[in-house]
Image (tube, rainbow, N blue to C red):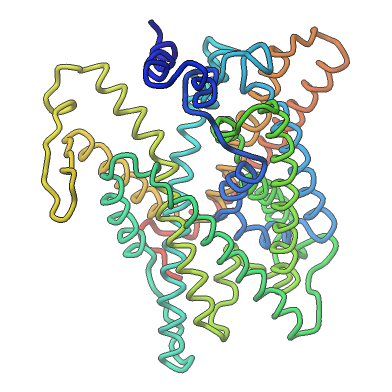
Length: 479
């Protein structure tokens, strides 16, 4: 008897037969209750993260015409490919076909073969990269709080230069402790806290941008972006490409779209609800991004900082900036765990299957926790592997503490395969679109165009890292 059948059987034993269909869905799982509102909230929470902080810098490289145009282009492509992906939640029939619970499940059941391994590898690489990006971003915010307080205590006399390394280590230590909590990403209030914190720091960044423009009475910036002279011709090109990667990163949520769709109730058809939720959430996100990016650029012009909140530097009210930076840190502490849990789970499952007899891998020690009913289950492999993983991401962050470059590389790496290629390929397979038909050609052309964008954005970010490394000594970064 299969798992799903067993679940239905178990439930049906406990509930009178006429109530079974009211309590469970067609796959035997408890009835899903998600709506357009909850799905939109999940997407907005997932999308509006630390990516929003680099948008003012990205628009500064591209200018008042190309910056918003590129943002609109990405929002359109993301919406279109996401609506293709929503049709892949069920394999075969859109109403009664087999459900796919995750993005990888959809790739496995619709495409299969080597593409599943390729998808898994890209996903885990992306998650690994995000954990590095979050470590860098959190350390920048910790330093910003320390520096602003130091600056005000000295009455503006001390420039307060400091190293980012101790702050990355502090963040790493906190993540080592949190990573030992099993199913940390399942804690129900975590997503709510993340959403509140995201809007807090993004809102403060937006508010300060508007206040700065109002105070000076001028809109800084130009139609073509950062001027030659401030940077060289070559730097202008590479930075513009890197900016495209930064904007792509700000829209990366396709990987979790299927998981969000799996919370939506039916009828109506899940895909229809999800298309509406995607349209609503991308519209809200794009409007918010436009405001944050544009106001940041209008405030700083050519000198828009890589991380918007550090640009307001030591301005009053400095306590407001401290609140914004503290909100970033709280958000990133939780978000780091949410993004790392799939990697932890994958390796632990693989190790258990590979060495099922190993005492080190499978044995759990029960440790009583005062004031808590259930004992803590300590697993030695989990302790060693998760600690090693966090240490690795922290060391890499200390070696490459370049927030913009790392974000650009991640955006480029994840955008084409996860947001465009797999959704397009699955949709073609799912809808049985015949080869060389006009629909097939258009979808393939979209995929190829996005591949080119990913390649040039990735190249721009890699060149950015190389240029930064020329003037940087490992472990010696001071701000």
